[in-house]
Length: 174
Image (cartoon, rainbow, N blue to C red; front, side, top):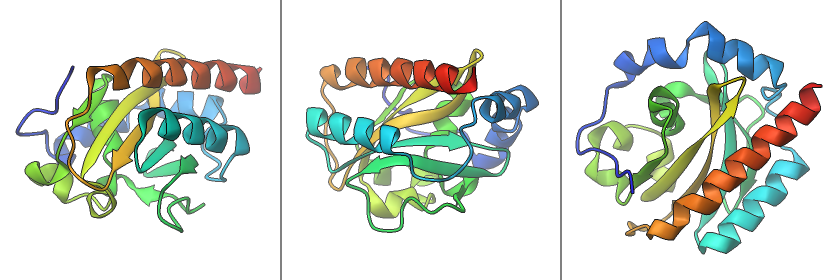
């Protein structure tokens, strides 16, 4: 399973990758940047949280400056702020930069992650990229309040959920 490396790339180094025009254009085309909680994505998050037995699950999309949680289950009140979250506070940018799933057993073991606001609400995290027009434009993720050794079985259902989300985005964009 792809575990987070002990040292992650800094936010400054990630900015050019995350802000790539093609990624932002794909996010816009997918109509994924409303920032409004969506019942379809909320239901998918509830299903994935229950399947994995975690504290929370979310679906997020990234614009050129913010991350928007459009689906969530088990997250703290106010997590789905329509104004979004600054990218510097987001775990998801690390997934977007690599284009690969990321598994973090203990967020506090990574100084780069501990600086994220998301670290205040989670101690363990898994994120899988959501693709649209071949670009990673968001993540579907799981989180837990305590560090945990994620089992190998956690990634396959999340990858399936990411594909399901892509299909839904394509349907909405047509």
